[in-house]
Amino acid sequence: MPSFYDALEKRSADERLAELSEELPKLIELAKTKTNHYRESLAGFDPSAISSPEKLASLPVLRKSSLIQNPDQPLAVESVLPNDLSEIHHIFQSPGPIFEVGMRKKDWWRFGRALVPVGIGNGDIIQNCFSYHFTPAGMMFETAAAAVGATVVPAGIGQTELQAQAVASLKVTAYAGTPDYLKAILEKGEELGLDMSSVTKAVVSGGPLFPALREEYDRRGIFCRQCYGTADVGLIAYESVATDGLIIDEGVVVEIVRPGTGEPVPDGEIGEVVVTALNPDFPMIRFATGDLSAILPGMSSCGRTNRRIVGWRGRADQATKVKGMFVRPEQVAQLANRHAEISRIRLTIKHDGSQDQMIVHIEGAADAEQIYADSVRDILKLRGQIEIVAKDSLPNDGMVIDDQRTPG
Image 1 (cartoon, rainbow, N blue to C red):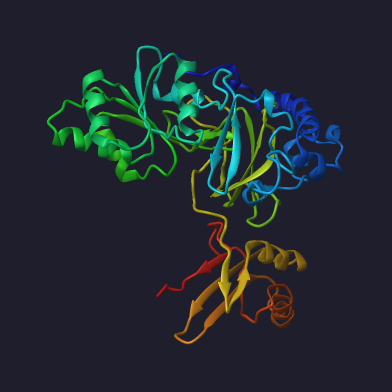
Image 2 (image 1 turned 90 degrees about the vertical axis):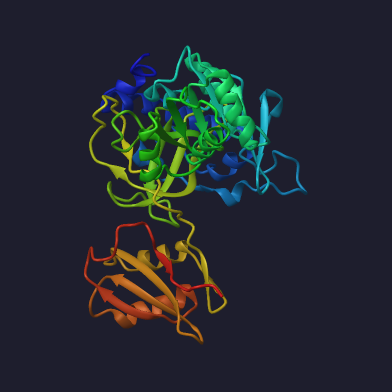
């Protein structure tokens, strides 16, 4: 088995940035001509000026809520979908409804890059337990397996007894699916008295691979690694043999931004994952995934040179209602931006048995409590208890709204 998917994984930082400086302007120009959404949202931007990740940060963020299709309008009106859908091979649907496209081109979603570090390739039989129904997940790993030469059992989700029987009968060597479903299949097989020992490799996604489950697979002799992607942009990052973070895919640019904004945070600080997919068939510019993560320093010890993220650290959408009023991360960001000396804010929402309470923790000026209180009322339309705290004392976990109320 090859150690690397291709030579792109071993590029120097300078080589990667030089190629990106050529790709980004072309991608942005294409997006403006190919889709109605980007024609409008990027109308005031010169593509030739967007030639680096730093300059990319000047463009607006695209949020999931903007992708929800209005049933009263034609499919591509005000959409990120290509205007000419006759060029598209597949159209998938996620809840919303949100429509995503797919192509039959080799490894179009790029998940083959996540299979190689696991050792999946020619001679393997991979049981693909991602859904083939409406969503693209099944096809993502179908095309990935084809790219590395593996044979696919298109099992999809459910019918666990049949899944176990297929593993035993076909001597399946590898699994693709959610982290915990493999355990369910193995246990069902053991319950039925079947030999499940042929499975020695697994690539999982759709949720975090928790340490206890990783250890369970290790104990069973299954080499398991996780990868991270979405229906909208394909593969974002993946684990290698080294398990020292998730390595960013070569087909995307990943930014970590302050939740509710498009402003990049320093490396190491937790924020929202924003992805630009370098895909001419389906350009996605600064797509906000809603997931929290952080950039790790340095490179992986496996020899791949791209940047890494720490993995999933929660969701960025922390909107909640306080005294009947919505409070959103965007408002918290607006509050911080109003006062240059503020480094971080965290709202804590509690209930004292009769009414909601909002405590506003601010890393800011010690003598500005009343000024901050006025800004809170102005922006959040609520009164809050202001607590000035020392710089860097608030947790670096990406959370700006901590709702501690217990339902019911």
